[in-house]
Picture 1 (cartoon, rainbow, N blue to C red):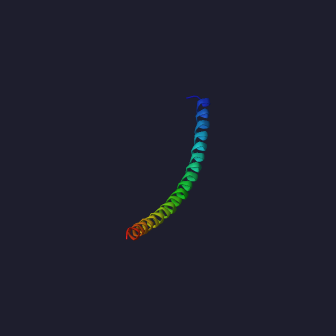
Picture 2: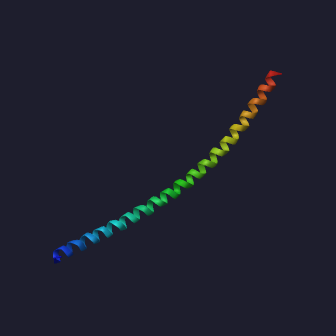
Picture 3: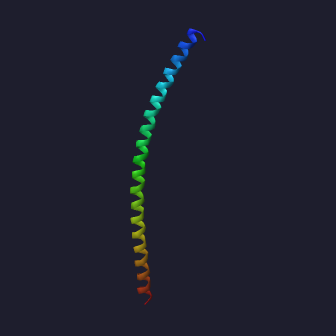
Amino acid sequence: MSESNVIANQKTIIQNQKTVIANQGAIQANQKTIKTNQASILKNQSGILKNQGALTAILKNQKEILALLKK
């Protein structure tokens, strides 16, 4: 292998290492975003469960109202 090939390969390796480092930074940023999104999802799921409870109570009240109206 010629000296020029070795130098060219070393330059390619250095560029690849820079790319890897940049990708690692992007991965870390994405992981942070994922964690934030997961927290939002959990909060939304909690809200959904509360809404389902409220809807169940409304349905129960509607049934009671219908029963009273039938009297």
